[in-house]
Amino acid sequence: MLLKNYKKTNIAIVEKEGRKMGHRQSWLLAFLVGFALLVGASSLQAQGKKRILEVAILDFNNLSKYEGKMVGRRAADAVAMSLTTLAGDYFTILSRADLEKEVEAEGLSYPLDKVDMVRLGRTLGLDGIITGTVIQVGISRSNGATQAAVEVACQMLDISTEEPITGAVATAKSSPKYDYTGDLDILVDEALNKAAYQIAQQFVSFAVKGVPEFTILTTMGSEVLLNAGSRQGIKEGMEMVVLRGGEKVGRIKVKEVTLTDATATILEAPRGIQGGDKVRIVYEAPPIGKAPLEQEIKEKAKTSLQKTLPALLLAFGIYKLMQKGSSATAGPRPSTCYADESNGMPIVHLAWDYRKIPNPTNIAAVMVYRVPINHPMPSSPTAIPSDSDVYLIYSWRNNLYFDNGILYGGSTPPSTCVDSLQLPVTITRYTPSDDLTSLDTNDVTTTPFVPGNSYNYYVIGINAYCPPAPPDGEARVVYHFMDPIFIGSCTPIYPPTPVSPANGTTLLVNQLNSVSFQWLAVDGANEYVVEVSTDPSFPSDTSKTLRSKPLYLIGNAGELMPETGLTLDLSRFKNAKVLYWRVGAIHREDTQKPPGGYVFRKGYWFTINIEPGPPSPP
Image (tube, rainbow, N blue to C red; front, side, top):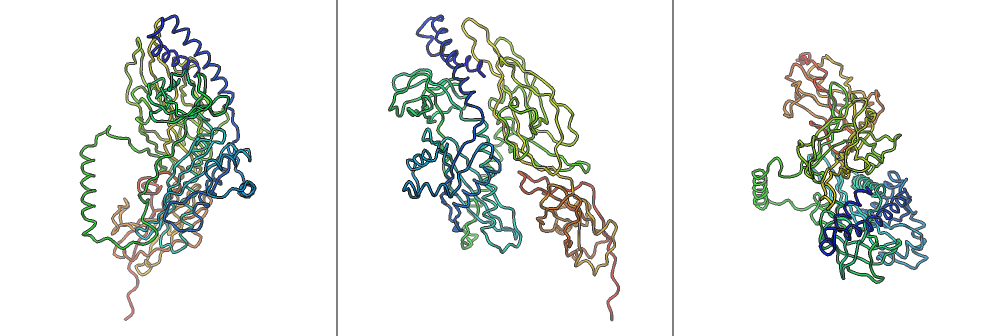
């Protein structure tokens, strides 16, 4: 990384200053600035050691129309619990009692403004204060199922800079509950907990990567030149806080961006801004949407067909236009991550859009990693400890070649792979060399997943690019890691085994109105369903296939369930001769369900023979 920064500095200085001075002077200036960056980078690396951040979490604002009990506090508590569970190695949460005690001692009252929060944070010796908003809460009722949906946003105010430093927005839904008549707050809490888990994952990613800092190379009147550009994620309009010795001395706004540097306008500088000062990006919360996630809690009168038909026709017309204008490269494809089975064995199907990797035409290598659900993904494969449970499960290298400053060749990167119990013992890992000008390879040992355990999957790309050659040197290709891209969460499970009615059981027609089903539980599953059909292909046609309502059950592998059996009315099939039945399962918190909605063992079922009953008495 140091060489990479040094090269970028050379390029930036030569481009901007070379016109005013000779090559000897410009390279001397480049060397001096590069040396300063080396020292600064070493300092940042020293600061990059893991440090536990001490934070307080205030009750969230509630902008939703849901009038449940203390929604904002419940959302804050859910985030606190997820951070404690998932990110205990990175965050310490101040107790509510200690927070309230200090608020009272300081004579403050809610809601707290930024000045109050900074004052409170400094008194308590906190690194940050997390605030948030419950943007939307909705309840949907469809096909007999009730489901809650929420949207939650939060951000952390950095006490030292008095600016928001990171944040997250999450949407989540509760599991659908059929024929539900209970307290809606229970469903809302489930959705809030899921959203809080997503937020905690993003905060862990922030804690692992640390705060990116860049350097002001020089000041130019009311503007400054930065040593980072679009390759480092800098965008026009970004606001940044300026630091000197860790203390805030000003604020700037990015005006113009190139690949390797950026120009920014000084917004405030009470203590002056000078070359060598550090800058951090100020977190900008996304705009809060106003459209409801689901139908409002308060029941609204049903809109007449006369009112809805024009809107439906308009939506259909837009949909057809989008279809007509679409192409294979028109937009990003959604990632795919779901568990299924193959010959009775668990398998995970993964797919991603390689175009989400920056500069996708120059992708030199692609790697896919499996990460335990409660483990953060390191910022790069080189940061993965040797004793970690993070495993490489797939890798691919492009056939790029480099000649005189230009990259040639290359093929379309892959976008799919599978994770299974039959992975190779070793997989090739690719990493940029120490001088970044080549790719190193080494074989790493992988371990199959544990069926029933939940995992996150990430794809990491290595990009190649050719910075302009220096005046007295030759062009070189430079390789670097891109940020990991989240594919999804998944729990590989075995397909459950039917038990009763046993295969080949014979039932009389008059017994079909109450048939009890049981099966063996599998690790990792918490939702099951039974299907009974007149066709062994189990078509979706409801006249041929009956699917039970989902059963939310958790049992140990091999345990008979449900304990009292699942009773179904099969009298609709009284004219059939043979029925086929099977049982499917999923882990309902997974990102995506498999085709068909559940993990069934393909081509495997039990049969039920049907015979006429005794004649009715006269």
